[in-house]
Length: 389
Image 1 (cartoon, rainbow, N blue to C red):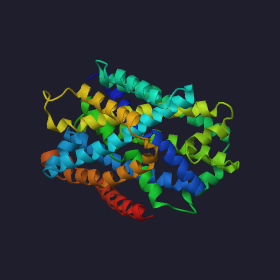
Image 2: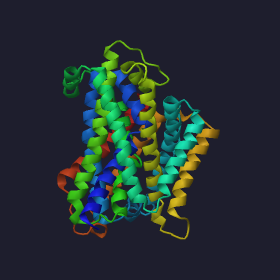
Image 3: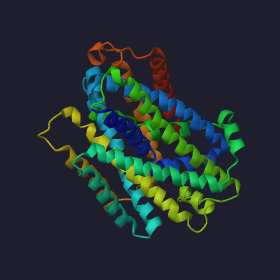
Image 4: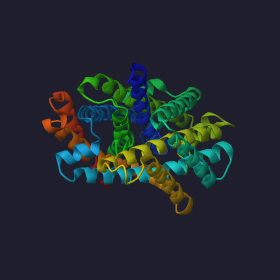
């Protein structure tokens, strides 16, 4: 692989992970918890960033060194664990995708005024076109770059016009007045939980970036993905804080939309619609791609073509939304579900890092190993606390 193609894959993996995280649930969660914690929510974001980086660096490094996908590694650690992990990820990914398809439909309704269900079908068609390209990897890379640019520009614009109390926000980011375990679990789960943290690592492996000699690129890609997602979240937090400081009362049915409607009168609803659609679309792509990558353990190329299986997941989610339900209420819950999945997946990867049969002569840095087990313990405790909160 040429240096240019490798660099493109490294950036593509980072943006696939970041844009997978920045979906309708991400927008909803950030707005809801800013309303609840005000400026102190900045501390929750900071804590989640540290946990995200620790979890993602461990997982990506171990998988790329092994050259195997997560389910293969998990099965090598404990026979059958890969099937369990795949099942959990597929469940979370499918639940997320139903919410993401709904978000795409709602976004097009706000942006263009078309029916939500029709908008969901249009969105599924666009995603299908991406996956039908001959070079799916390159198509994913270009698509996620374009969508990430749109998302970042729109949120930074909302931040700019909302004129938030930046000094107070930064102050409470480091010295909070309040803390919420549920918010922490939800944010970490929504950023690196479930399928999301595996999205970029599986993309790197598919692009042929494997082995200990590629760890510098892995570190860069993993950190970039977390940084992009975290910058987007912090700007949305600041924009929400600015609107709340003006005395605005949000619509409980769609608090994220209220931020843009109050910050940018007249066209705020349409801008939010474009943002919601862009965020939802990238999350549909990430969830479908990664969910199918978890079926590759069973390495049966004759069983089903990967491309068509990916499209089946996209359209199953779409049809469920169109004919069955209103999944908007699941967005917060699914973030928590992914928070529960993270300790399981990370623990399996940390055990794998100690097995020469999996990683050869690679030695996971002691500080990363300790941080990884700290995250496993903390996320397990916080997840349990969140259930009873």
